[in-house]
Image (cartoon, rainbow, N blue to C red):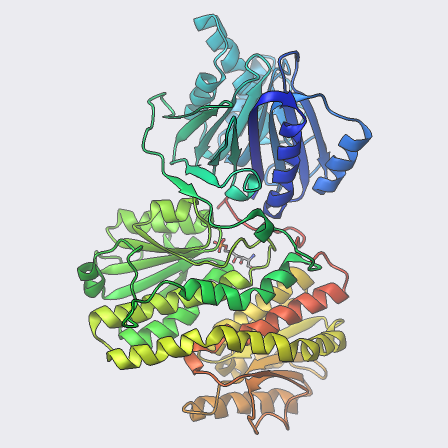
Length: 628
Ligand code: AGP
């Protein structure tokens, strides 16, 4: 949701502001309703705060018009509004009543109203409609109490005391002019990572906040607080007990990976990184004999062997990757695979045992719904394996094991390369299970691995040969009011994903259906000119399936639909019913989602571009949904 950055360094200079603005630029994908910074130095009597509604560029322009003072420490925030409309006054940072403390916050403080009423009864006045201002005023009050008790300011202690009083989800960073040489933070059910520098330290919602300055990072655990100065990082629980086992890691990507690098949008860049995302996710996962080795997944082989059911929990695009996995893993491993939207999962009393493997798929590793689902699964005694693209994030940390996708940072809100990487990771898990359970012969597994290794080139082929056709189709269809997407078998999740992309960035009413469902209702939507996108499986070995989807095309065509068809090269059956064809190179049906989704990603991007929309930052959305 919101993006948070904090910085403290050795000397007074322009760096704190620079780090905050650069960090916010890299975190803007997390929310872009407003942005703000707060700076502290030794001479200030009140924190210097500047904040603006709208994109980060509004804030930057404002600072250029009227500069901010030099500082030692700074915090910065980019907001996705949950509590209080997007406006200058609701933008973060918020300050204590005396202006000596400023805070920024990600999450929702559920008991904010109760706290606010209590503060109002003591005479506190509020100017915004946010829960964050309540925390700011409360922190100011507690900081004053600490001074009265101990005779000196202790922002770290004050923050911990406040954290113990809050319910809901929060990451809060705070600065205080009485202690300008520290930045403090606390987290509960919301992300916060530490960047470790030389003579400077950083805090961020994720490592993108500071990767341009340091590659060394440290995870913070649940209900932990942190105090950074230029040379030290102190981590405690909310009661002040020091925590010594925080996990340190080296960020495995470069700041340039989170830059557009000449592309017109991150989404365009990231679609073109689909082949690399699959290739990198496969890399290093096989031994010299060609067997799958998942050493990093610290689940015992014996435990893997005993698994008799898989439940995938995920949201949005990640859930569609899970649906692809169902078809592949059930076929290869012969155990049931259920796929469940994470936000529905724990409210329906799912049947979980110690032999159930719960696979939590998440690009960001911070999706609150998925996090809550995995916590529920672990409480019920099931093992949780995370498939995640983000180091240092909460979901892998709270899972029993993790298989990282190596798609690199995904900045565009609409997920693209992470989707193909997630599918690839689920294939690896399926084939690994088949290997340890012996449900397939080794040579069969090796043959699929070989086909899987060929997929990045096939995706590249689609990008090289189909982009023009896709653009022409987008030009023809850009003014359509709605779209239907149809697929069967693994084409079904691809249809759902294609439809989601178009909704997200082109703001077009679009529905994805299982093609077999058409005659049970959705065909009533088909009228003259209605665009229908259909994913046709290969005729090789899937003849019945292929013929049934061809019949679906015939049915919609007969009712005047404009048909956009994805089909295997040289499929002779599609020409007579298709207005447009996006060709896929021949590949095994179970692996085909990796290529079939590519033209649909391009199609959504082209339509949104032609409509003049912001491709990377669609309205109302945020990249990582850290509230339930
Ligand atoms: C994808 O385009 C969406 N923005 C969204 O559905 C996303 O996939 C979903 O919110 C899950 O996010 P995660 O993978 O970070 O958990």
